[in-house]
Structure formats: C-alpha cells, structure tokens
Length: 259
Image (cartoon, rainbow, N blue to C red):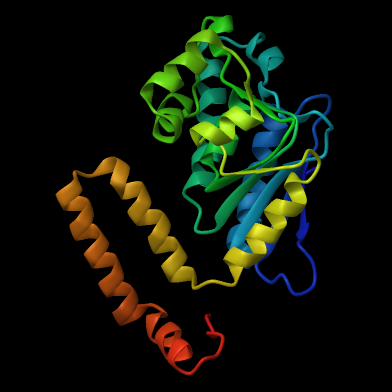
C-alpha cells in the first residue's frame, strides 16, 4: 500500500470488492507518487483476485485534477516521454484488469483525472462533479487515451466540443451524453459505487467479463464480425463458464452458486 493510494475491503459480506482511495494533496495531480500507488493497487487486485475495485478520492472537490503540470514543467523531452509512458501504463493496466472497476467521482475530474475515470469499466457521479479535458490550454492534447475513449463514450462531435473548448461538463450533462453511467446526490458517489460493486461481485464472473468484451467489440469490429464474436462468447459460457449452474438454479428456483 502506498502513501497516496490506499485500499480496504468494502466490508463484511462484500467479498471480492476493494475500495481504493487517492489522497495526494492538494488536488490529486497524477504525478509519479499516484502512478506508483495505482500500480501497487493493481498488484493487490491481482494478488487477491479481486472481482470489483472502486476508485475514489479523499480530497473534497477533487477526484483528480489531471497530470502533474509542475512535474511536466521541469522535464526535458526524453523525461516527458518517460512520464507519459508511465502514466499511460498505469491507466491501461486499470483498463485491462480482470477486475471490473468503478470510478466514484465527486468534484472535478480533469485531464488525466478524467482519463483515469474513463479507463474504469463504469463511472458513478455525484451531482456536483464536473468533467473536462482542458489540455489545449497548455498547447497539448490528452495523452492517456482521452482522445480515443471520449468519442467512444459520447460521440465524435461532443468529444471535439469538450476537448476543443476545454470546458467543464457538469454532472447532469455528463449523464445525459453517456460520459457517466449513474448520477447520484452530491456526496453519495462512493456509497452508490460500493453498492453497485457489491451487486456486480455477486454475478457470474465469466458472464460479466463476456458482457464487457462483447460490448467493447461492438466499437472495434464490423457488425457481422461482432455478431460472430457474440456467438463464440455465449457458446463458451455454456460449455466452459457458469451457465449450467445459472440455468439449473433458475429451474430449481434458487439463487445460483457462482464461483
């Protein structure tokens, strides 16, 4: 466990749910300490074989304010590349983890902070949260897959509008355009995300993973190939997953006993 990223079990009965908290004052800038902390967290997720991880912040008003601009202002081109590679590595490791991830966002999620939230499987937003990718104000563009993930969530036109104007998107608009998945009262994002995580952790893990894979494939494959991929996934679940237990439990009118 690091000094700036800590974690704990969601609580008794919530097996498989890990709640991670980012706390690097004053605004959770994604510098080397948080990058190291995220990697330590993901090491723990793998060690425990965690089902769902909730990512939240301890700092009022901030989920994460973005990349560490003070650090960027002190480096040369080679070091800038190294820093970017390390940040991208942590973000992509979160995105590709076997565990489902949920960002519980209160306050602002800007730049790299929004890229971190978008790398999560789902996003739960407090009503006062705001989102943005303001890198153009620095003469830059998002560098941790923000230009790729944002259009997949909100569409090309909205993504260009958000990035080109560097504006902050309020939570209600973020929900309406698909940038966040659930909108709750301000201050309730963590509790709502943990409740969602607990629900997801009770489901068939192979089936949940297949849902995510097939939905992602819809953005990457032509329709005909995507439909063939869907058939492969459902057949695999029936032959090698937990479908037989789910079907049997349904017929026997009992809760399924998924592994």
